[in-house]
Length: 300
Length: 274
Image (tube, rainbow over the protein chains, first blue to last red):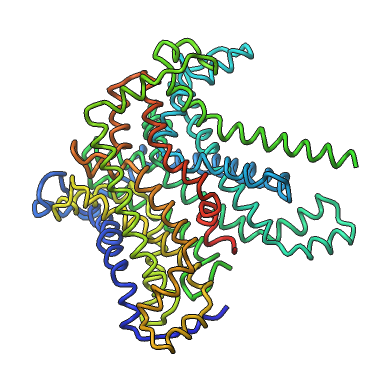
């Protein structure tokens, strides 16, 4: 689609509409991001004037990239993203394929499926903490019904990691489901009809027609989920605070702790640059697939 | 024919099972909020208990709850209104005008959408202190506008593109200035988009607590910040914690029931047409 013809194309009018938002995004969005990178080159303590900050060059970056704890945290983040996002994609796509179509009451079910995404992270974290509670938690109570001994979910390194993954899958599988359902609904029904007349069975139809036709939606959904998985912080903050040990310490959690508990701002900023690089790479990938703003093209 | 029926029944069964999984934890949160301390220790899975409102009474009549609630409401409502105003103007400017720098604005906007909040926590604290905005509601509102603008612009851009450009041209020929064309023709037609943007902006401004934790003090705290600090004080008083969590979770959940279509259009924006 070509750029929509502009009914009025004076640059002054354009900036009149854009400038207020642009100023806010520059001052309170881009400027903090650039400052985050710049802070990595300085030694500065919170609460002291910026004038007292000391230039330290690449020292923070050298320390950070030589610190095994940082690489452990990156590994934890990668594991978290890989496991949770692949589970969400698999479950979400499978469920959408099995349940798409004109089912009466689908709108109602869809409404219920959105609920987990809208719950405040603080409430999600607290609720799962209660669900996983070793002594009084409903999950152990449920396991007891089946004769399984109570587990200290959030006190064991492996189980705690499983716990943050379970809560993420609970909250975000519905997102994949909704995206895929919307993608499937946008397929031209005459294409499906033609394939059916040619005698294609459900599996062939799904593999050869439906999935290829929503490949674009699947790719965008995957990258959007990956970006969010790398940004994750709030639910983990409440559920495990990165523990026990450092078993659930994803990069965002590690940055937060380094900055606000360790008071090592230079180091925190250097790790921030690492996380920012990963997320920006994924964002660049997403924009290559679909850039809704760049050329007046919408989506496709 | 019987096979078709069976398949349909199986699908409904699967949908119902999924619904239970999705709603289950939310239901546990709500039910636990009506349990006494003793009941949370003894009734684990049971739905059969004499409900109590004492958790809500304790939470709501706590000396500071009212202040935190008002802070949360002010931040949520003001940030949402201002984000919508600036966002729909920028979306219109990007969709309908060609000008030098347009691509730069577009790309920067989209890149800002995915910046991890942990990355900006320290610089935001530093800059806001410098600007004397730390520990003020205004500072938090400014930050939430900046955080929400990229998504709002992204979402509304799609809606503006769907407005028939002929309508705007006709109004312009009739002598309407661009500002009036925007107000009279475009705004009314993108109302569903505005509703979706409002829900998602309010959701962030109401729910977010990491940046708010860094940027607020005792008198400017929002509810989620208060709740996150409460956790350590309160230990295992699950009834109270769940009452507080329920109160925070409720407004965004209510929006889902009031405007499910808008929520879905917001979730799928940019990836799926329609």
